[in-house]
Length: 389
Image (cartoon, rainbow, N blue to C red; front, side):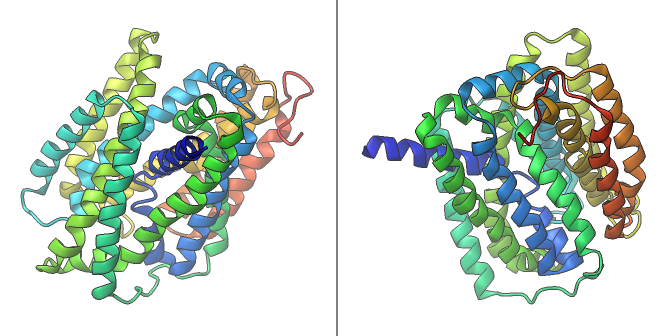
């Protein structure tokens, strides 16, 4: 019995660590800066609910394997873009949290290369998840203590709270759909016993993951103040947090790279070249952000970060809603009509998401999300299956 509960706890930790990426460890800081604490709430609630729901929406290991087989390309792109996103962040974060200018880009280029090399070489083992969790927890506790001791007041929202409802619609759409495209989450359904899967998801996201993103919200004001002030305080606040950030990032990348290896082994040369170009562009794009101009009050790094986010706010949600959901119970590859409708929905909604994410007029998210939701009316499932059934 103790071994069973230990296994469930281990998978809970694994789930929390695998879903704690450069979004959960950085986006709350931006949202609190722009919208106040309400920005964190509308980020955290659908995030936790959406990730937890995967434990119920995916019935068992057989259903998990059927989903991955039917939508193998979508899962491959999700993992590929997630790795590229992390590489971009590792390379460009010096623009926001820098303490070694004017050589930040060179140093982060080296750090990013080392992180990518380690993540490539690491093979997932259950103990690795536990080790990562212990490392994250230790640095999290240290950061909380330090951030509390040097508590900075919450910043005055730079955008205001008027658009919080628009932000909520975008976060809800993204976080209720994207977890269904994360192979590392579906992996648990094939490894954890059917009796413990739901409990592992519940504990993993309602306890461990929620604690991780709450850490970011708690320490965020102090991190921003330390990075902006460029004083000795940065060593006490930024260094522990960056160790937490790096440990989580390496773990997440290692999992997604492992998933990518299985896909690339059978992929065409064109697909391999596309992945290579994506990785190289992300590394160099992040490295050169300190030297690129700002736009709409956003640094080049933050602009690139927000553009990456549109993959998870618009493109992947549109695919899940239009191509996966109609045949959820009996997974089937998307039809050409479904892919066409999803693509057109993304094109039509893109200007609205640009206004919401880049121009930071969040109310524009509402019509953008509505376009994606209405696109479902123009497709039919291959059978009588339906997501809601």
